[in-house]
Length: 337
Image 1 (tube, rainbow, N blue to C red):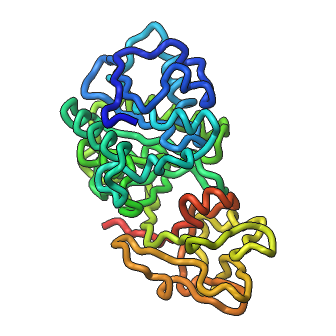
Image 2: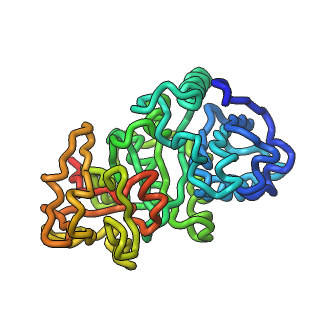
Image 3: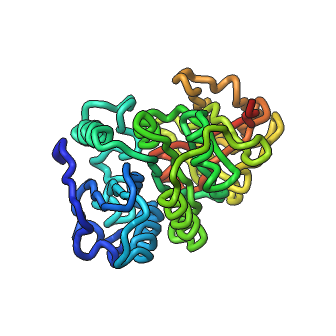
């Protein structure tokens, strides 16, 4: 991969009809696509950073079909992430880093991909942006929700356009929304499972709404209009260990584990079971990078439980996703001033 992204100024032929699996035929690599609109600066939309999360492509295609033959209300810049991984429906290829962990601010710097995304941010900063939206699916049962990395009014108002559930986080580092937040209000949208019609439509409606915005309100949303949760820890399976549904896995998951997502669980609630001979298979990492396992998790027999009340998100039964990313995040409600 080169350290410079191609830039296009019109949609490549075949883009609107491409599936995630065939997009690489017209957009073979990470690419910026700039489309003119009635107003500037542009709304930036990041799609397919994870190749198994197609909602960004699907929502953008729906949006652009709506404006066929018409000028967009605002200029639009598309950042197409990982079409090679999308071709095989994988988060990323084995030889690739995670494309949503290598943006400026990353702890995984030095790769050609990280240098490429740093150059992408420099170009977007030169052009200027109105706002930035990064679109994702997830594998567990989660509501649609928006993630922000700053608690300034513009960020909260952008998130509130998507819905009342908002997550504030500053880790993991190197995500697109955090890098683009240096340029304009930005948000990551979690739109439910892949290929879910409700998620595609919700994302489309959000994009269309932001294209029509003139400005963001100067005041934050009222406390009763949104619910903000603060991510306090990421829970990972220690390297070399496996999580899954079967008894032979080091960390055994219950088949309905993801029903706990966005449920405020009391202290001592069970998260997972473990094999007796496995010692401390989970690790919790705080926003500042400290290990905080003993603050949030405790072992009782073959169970790992919450040591204090917390709300999990992104719990999944997908062993590959757990290995590539994490088991879940732990959140606490955040009161608005």
